[in-house]
Length: 391
Image 1 (cartoon, one colour):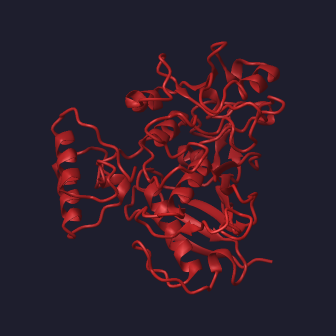
Image 2 (cartoon, rainbow, N blue to C red):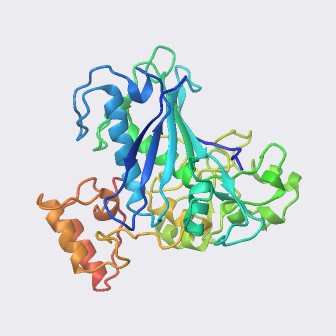
């Protein structure tokens, strides 16, 4: 069934199809396939000459956009175990913007599934990528799992004039906006970091809950979304402000991961979700609250380059993703050992390659000997913090 919602990432202040396989270089990591839905000369096919930047070797704007997409997909792909490829249909389009703010991108599951073999809960909707992973098969062969679009007008007059996407892979976006961060955020929505409910009416999608909505609570009433009436859900969607929220995430894996949050964590352990009044279509409910600190990838607004999604992937695990690969597990074998520390050390000196969401254990943006030591300490059971990817 086609999904009805798309998450958005915003910032304030006749088609030719081409497929590119994006993978993390290991059999047990998921492979992403991007379906380029732009026409000749536009978007991902833009032939405008470009100078290689920040590790991105593309020599046209379109090439750089596709290389950045591959990199962002690899960041996720390295952490998700699945035998079923994830297909993303993507394009550049004219999205909402003005001189002071812009929707940078929007994405969501291209379809949803329920009551398939392997589903964790019956009568519950699952984002297509998660459904395929749980079913261990492609439930709708040949159909995309994620649909995404990005703002083609960014930087033009009247659309955050003069502020453009930065296509480097290193997060050094300066006065511009890191495209890898935007891509990674939108892929998170496509993987299932969003609710399918209609917050205006409070109605559940197709009359049934979804794997994300099952963990949403209105803390002012202590009711979970599946147990509420339509009116109660609609009220819960706006039970907050720009700085606080009574809409909470109750999933135990994300709660455990968020134990070190300095803001955005309720005394109950629950994590605050974005629920401003008035409702913000495409943003409300499907993001962490803006006050979550340290910043999380799946907050509603771009603040800085961020390739780290430890908290976000914990939420996806709450929704049902099995056996996610942990930060520091460089060889993706399910455990963190001295072998993983050696891979990180070899990466630090240029003798190996390891994606940052596996080996950059201190979130510096670069894999160094410090990361190798963190992983080694984890392997012998020491209580150290590992959080991978630029933060």
